[in-house]
Image (cartoon, rainbow, N blue to C red):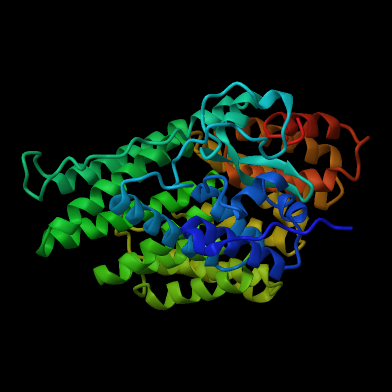
Length: 472
């Protein structure tokens, strides 16, 4: 006979109410604690303590649970309310507030997927990082307690995104003692982009998050043109943060940053900025498999982009890829042909899409050909792309290699797929890029059906070495 769940007491406080919301969402999906545990990296007993408000709930956990239960932000909004109420209660009572985020528990409970290698950190389990992880459903990017990642030996994944201390905004107002704060932030953004190319997003994203906080504080005190320029900078920082969050596999953060960037772009009244971010949202939706959304956002980007601009070319290219995701081959190929024609006539403004050239469009076309099952043509396209790609574009090379490997597998050349995939694994190990690892995960699932083929065992073993294994 199944054990009757403990009664909850939502009236006892904000975190008790949040735990009740969690249980209601879980039961509405007909999901047991064990079934929910299989979708996130917290074990069933840990989740039960969330429901009973016996453990602090980190925001990463709320994000993961909201996504796993597919409740469209309900648990996140409830979490935000609980934080506000808990903080208000702390200010009024000045007493102990149970389960306030950031509270360090007096004992360390058994975590998600416990194992002997998870001991040895003094950090609380609320401190999590998003890492590539082997799960029963395949390779997924999930939030895992940092101490567990450190103990597993994947130090780069744990240490590269260390939290940034709470900032103290360095500018009291525009025109303060620090000269040209607007130019300062613009320069910082350029430096962070260069740093990302050298050291990767896990190093850069915390700094961007801190700078976003400083920018917001400064912009709220500014007026007139200064406020407008600061908001435009804030929008660009948000867009960049969304791109980097996507590249470390944090889909929710990528969506949140990009959505805020789009909202802010409308406030700025700059249609070019809006068109660019709509294109980014289309790209994000495509990468995450939201096919109809990808095409709709790309269409909106084209409608917003100035005619004859590179932004229009980018939007047409995203439209073409959206058609390919929907299996619409003729529309997709026509779109890429149109993008190439428009590029020849596009304004060379040097601001938007300065990186865009015919080789980039042909590479995007190869990706769409692979999505359409035209793997022989895709292999040729990726081969051309790899030959012309500048040496400094290390992560892009890894992405192209991983996609090329999948196309080799698609035409039945398993040995070449494993060889090319192994090269992509090496770049993924250097960069930690989710864009590469996502493709390698799909390749891994394909090659698992041919375990004795030459090179497959070496590829899969190498991939395993850069993944977090919960069962260790």
